[in-house]
Length: 546
Image (cartoon, rainbow, N blue to C red):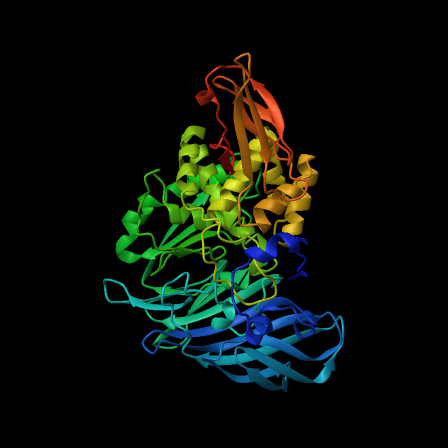
């Protein structure tokens, strides 16, 4: 199991003014903070049994949690939303008492659980889980019917957490090393979850059981429940660069009447996996396989079970945005996972830049620059990309962890001025933190060491401040008719020394390194309008002073 302390880069003086304005409640901290009642145990495995009854919008079952005690304890915390009922709790065969406090459950184990001992906690639950109002952003269950009249059920819970429906330790830093999901659904429907399908069997005349197994660590909001009248399309992918012991299995669960449409549309998965293999390495859950499942909402990055609901549409760059974006999360969110929702920029920034890399792979760099230009229009600069840790609060109010983050990486790539170094560093980054919990500090430390550059000031500004680095410049004509430019950074983080490109000579980019104090260079032309700063590759703000 992966258990990590929250260790954020200390940049308090840079970030406080830019944090989202919200009054956090006691329950935000109860659900979001790693107290001793949560750190005293490390989850190893989830065995989830859940029966889905669409006609009642009702679920029931139990979660058996295999854990390792990291300290002696007699009291522990799990999480389950108040809409869901706890029927009983057992530690082994010992029935336990518990106390509910809103969405938090405090369990008295009755006997001391000793450090380094394994335990099995079994929690029976039932109820009508929260229904999603605007999935996947406003999470919950989605109860619909397809056009043929069959029940069609999906679920997305990244924002509100897996404890919306499942009793669990609902914190990003503690993922089970593996999981089994036993999904019971009405006949003739199919129940689809993460990983590999192990068995399928009748329960009785009305219900059927599907057993799915995940052999890798999995983030809890990635555990997926899907029910529908599905057809199964099978394919496989053979890597082109790396060696693999066997091809990657590809499975697409689509509504029966969309089967032919899906066969043609999902051919782009082969292209996508080839491109991502080049830029970010092999698919990280090879043993569990890659799976798409058609859902009654737009999409979500459920691990090895990517939710797809984009109605088989291509964008103007001739790819399916949901397919590419949510699949890229298999590397950034599902394989390497942020330790706290405050660091969700790690998931979204790298994933959003992966879209631009896909365009670069399939259509070339010029098309990728156009795509990035479209992304740039969504940047708002209203708040820092790193939020407040230790609170249950995921309601980001702007797009900057997506689009500003993508442009930050685009800027970093340009600043390094070495595509080979950037791509190799990205590959090594993904491989080093495969199946691991990661913090912002880890990202900064790794990229600084691997590139041989001190990137702390760079990340300190882009991640912990809302405003962009501002380049102030002033063009002057000297007495002999020559033109000089004075330039400086006006607002940057301490020791910020990002080089940029300007036209010192007409129609040619040259590198300069602005500092906080004024610097002066001579320009090799006589028309001030010919001076340019490269804003096609750098995310900065310009201020011309007369």
